[in-house]
Image (cartoon, rainbow, N blue to C red; front, side):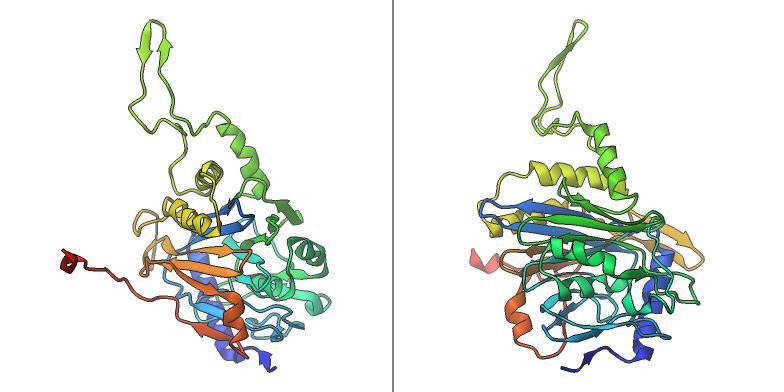
Length: 367
């Protein structure tokens, strides 16, 4: 099979656009949860936020494809590997890279913004033969591995580097969530302390600070409970709650990463049991509706004008049956792709348009 890459010029333009945009946005408020169904299926799901439309589409790669690392670096090449498994998911700006997706074995991968905390290795002649750029981790993980344990074992064999672009002096700062069909889930972070792999013990992931900081912060909310509060007596005064809704009283409601992490933990872990995977997918999208960010509620203002973070798309993965689900800013109905069928029908990487458009069903004539 032919080597998987586009021309150096096209790849370089794409990487400049990506990193320029990342460098000018400080919010990028992605939120991830995990829902588990009674039939044993694990469903990782997430939102993707950005300060502009990154024009994501579904990018599919069949097994056997030869992939070259450092693909967006205009000056050097890395190493090549053959994809053991076919995979697909959401890309951005026409780039041949999956930022969120699942492979034929049900392994899920998601890249989450980690600005200020992400620290990657410098690319050198010595590490180039094992270097993977930070934005390429989805391809490397989904193409190579079928389980979380395999990913853990392989991480020390590579150096994750920041693809430097002189014009903007930046790289793509991510940390990564990986979940497999057994239900095992991890968060991978590269910081000043080096590589750290955390078990995702609370079924949630957002952005910075580091994952262990978020776990510590949860201790501020040990009093939260999903049951509505009853009345209480203060002195000689009996106080009643204001009707329904006193459950989870005190839950933070802003768009910051720590607040979203607490909400994600609360909603993912208080979700009623799902009988099967389809119900779990349904509930995952409903929960993530709570994290949908409308345009205008988060803003950065600079010399180029107003940048507003908003939810571009929401996705979920069926790790048992290798299915990928998504809806977008315009396409509010959920769409799905059977990963095994999709990648078995192609012989080279292929892109499918993600947006179907906003559709309203007029039922007036049914009266």
